[in-house]
Length: 198
Image (tube, rainbow, N blue to C red; front, side, top):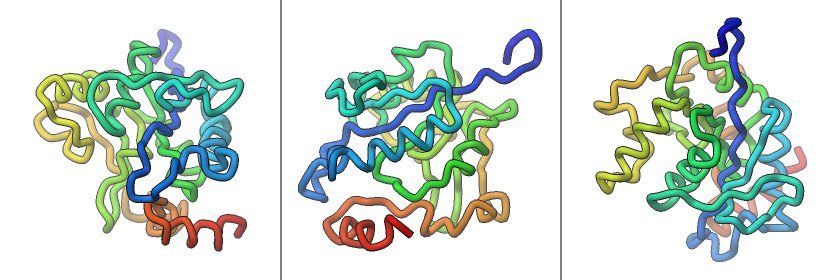
């Protein structure tokens, strides 16, 4: 929040540094980095700045490529973003969530007095499609120092102002099961190729 009461837009952060063990090939580079480019485009519709946490591999020309921060897995990518953009909020989207609509991301970006805004539905939390304010990022860094790398329980005992986007407020953007389709296995890849143009 600035002194004039306007909201500073978060930095869009695409998570594209995973090892893709279950898929068997690097999902961030599939078909000319289609997944990564799609995530960049959706975040760029909302955020003036978009960076790619891809372990410094420079997957997307013209976009800042970030090395991992401390920790492992998605946490390392998020903290890599926090290190490069200190004091800024991050709007995080994993490249392997190809069906998250831009409208949902825009809703997450409009965090009003919340440190962490995360979708929640019958399938659980979606912390790889979420808004992380500076306090949430600081709490995440503290957890990593303690050897804790899970994102799902970030709110537990951290004293954060958390907003869950759930129920009808979430469903107005689509069916959560479809929106949060996660591309992890060869079977998921086949499904994505079947419906990605629809």
